[in-house]
Image 1: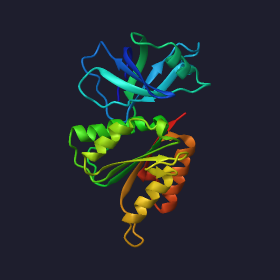
Image 2: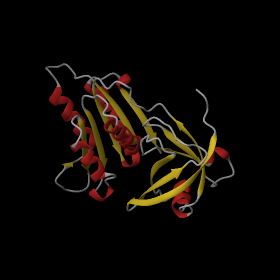
Image 3: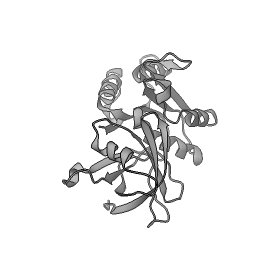
Length: 245
């Protein structure tokens, strides 16, 4: 596989998504179309350190391939993070950013012939938003695709209205937001109980329903999910992950 060259992207739009999360739209002027697979990421080279490898920050692409040369990133501010401090404090509309990509194999197969559980926390929702929009846009055949998104409070729900509406018009696409710190009219608790319950409902006797699990988010969530899924009896080959932080 050829290594993508470093390119220059221009920031054309910035919006606050939540109190500590910001959306950045980047345009790649040298390309007519920025092509990628939903689930892939880009690496930014930010002027925050003398050493090259300490300047690099990778983010999943939150948008979906639409034939344009624009892509979106959704980034959460980290108080001690040199990368996000630079992006939030220094980057504005018109700024240029050096990047490389798309890269990555955290992608769905072309044929979705079984159930898929997309489990995430925080900005780990980015690649899954791309996947669901791509499935909907191209009307790709699928069985059940469950997007299970965990966060603390309703104000931290990324793309809430968009994903709720997307699931409403696409049979088989299920959006299940889960709040751990706030009572509301949706699911309260943690993501792990949600997919465990769904699996239990589908079991026939002791037979596990076929499924694949895609995990994206912080290490603690991914570690617990892998432990839970394997304890249920699934092979580790059914688990795919993208680690944040």
